[in-house]
Every structure is written in C-alpha cells, then in structure tokens.
Amino acid sequence: MDWDVVDVKVIGTNLLKVHFKDGLEGVVEFLPTFFRGVFTILSDRKKFEQVFLCDGVVVWPQELDLAPDAMYHEIKVHGRWILD
Image 1 (cartoon, one colour):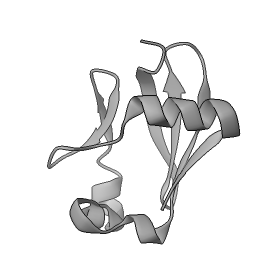
Image 2 (cartoon, one colour):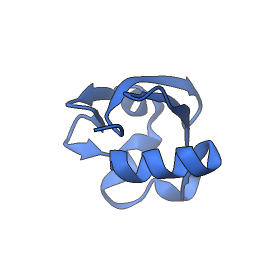
Image 3 (spheres, one colour):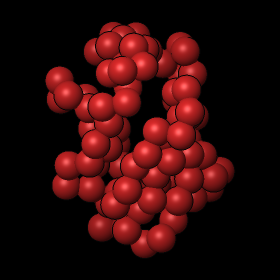
C-alpha cells in the first residue's frame, strides 16, 4: 500500500519524520495533550525514541502504533500530522 512507512526517525522533542513507500514524506508532531491513556508512556523521551517499523507501521514497544492510513492522508494534505 502507498501508506506503508519505509523509514521513521525521531527529529526532535515529540517529533517524527516519516517516509512512505510512494516517496511522500512529512512530520508527525505529538502535542503534550496526546500523551494520555495507553500513550502516557511515550511522554518519557527514552520510550518515545524506541520507535521502529513493523510491516510498514510506526510502532513502539508495548504494542503501541499509529494508523498509517490516517498519517498518510494528513501528511499528504497538510505536510504534517499533529496529534493532540
């Protein structure tokens, strides 16, 4: 699928840069309000930096992930996906 992520990097505090299979790239920005519920653990920078890819999906330990289709759409339209 075009929305498969092929590369992810932490580029700053609460920021990821992602590259998709079709060449689209952009930024995912996590606002402080995002870090609640199951995502609370990612407010710890060391945990946030454990991001990796699994089958084209951005994931973290403890089975946390981001929807690649929603990420792709927001980045294609706005150049970034802001999560709050």
